[in-house]
Amino acid sequence: MKPLLQNHPREFNFPVKAKWRNFEQFKTQQPLLYAFAILLFSFAALDFFFVVLLIQKLIKEPAPLTGPQWIAVIAFVALTSLFLVIAWYMCHLPIREQQRYYKATGATWLSEDKRQALRLELVDIYRGGYWCETLEYYPLAALQGPEKYHTFRPADANLYKKDLDQSWGILTTENYRKVAQQLLTTGYHAESFTMTMSLRNADNEVSKRLAALTNLPESYILSCLEHRSNGRPPKLIWGYECWRLIVISRDAYMAGHITAEEAWKNILQAADYVYELFDNFEDFNNNYRLGNAFWSNAYEVSNQRTVAYENFREKCDWSMKQLPWPAPKGVTLPAAMATGYATELAIAKSMQQQPGGLN
Image (cartoon, rainbow, N blue to C red; front, side, top):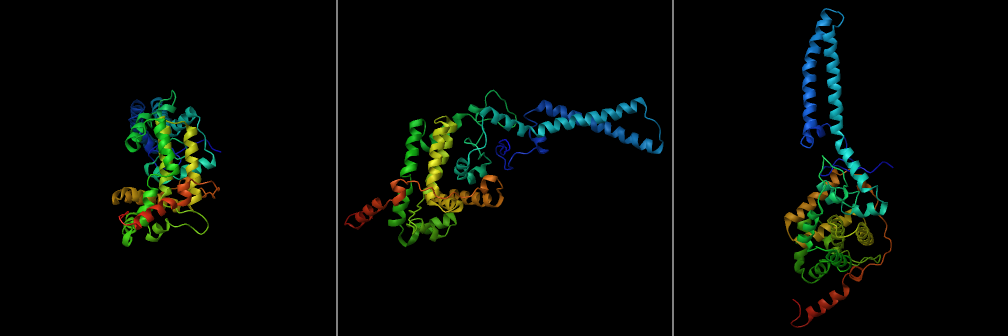
């Protein structure tokens, strides 16, 4: 197997390749080397002018080269060769630096089950040009060791601490574990989705709006409430809940709140639940978008997810996209997931039917 190599951060070619545009792109990272290369090119271009005149002269009047003429020819070859060597070095810089980062972190290709689990976040990872083949989706300063990099700047853990605090109120390991436990057992919005769609969807007003927000058939949205004939429980919006668990687990690892072992334990657990509930990647992603639309109730937010998925389907050629969908493992689902909130829904319906009950 080839050594681990991913896309360059924020770019979409997978894996990263040496390209001529890298020479210009990274001139600000190594300005002295870039300036020296440009100087070499300028002298080579000037010398090329004299070489062309020399060739024209020799065509008209063949004669042995004089000492100065040999110097001009040798100088042109030397200057051109040195420029190409430096240009090659700069064009390959993103490859070498990514390899140095993985050497410092000890990262290698993930096992198949871990790749399958991270694939569940691939649409959004591809949209941002992030990494999908490592637990960290962007180079981390905490892992870089003594190395210095010119083509990317490893991110500080404080960036992820800030995002987790703003989005989830997670500032400690205990905060993370509390959120993760809820996402993996009762979810944050799955019960609300169940009650809203079952008790407050008069004239299908809610389901029609969700269909408009997501460009999904209303029949699909309503089907997410149904127990299936093969014994599988309702999908509800568990794709969204499990997706969020994967996201915050990666962020919590990058923030330094949890170890890689704890992050993987929860990510793999969420992935196993997904395989029990959903038939394929498209089914999972549709459900994730449905949950996102229910949570946001905003066209701009929902449309971003729809556009991202269409872009992913049409343009993404990353190898992870081609992974087969795993068969269900027969894991035991948490009660809320396994029953589709049957008890809570029965109680709510009973209260709604009583005089002065829910309305």
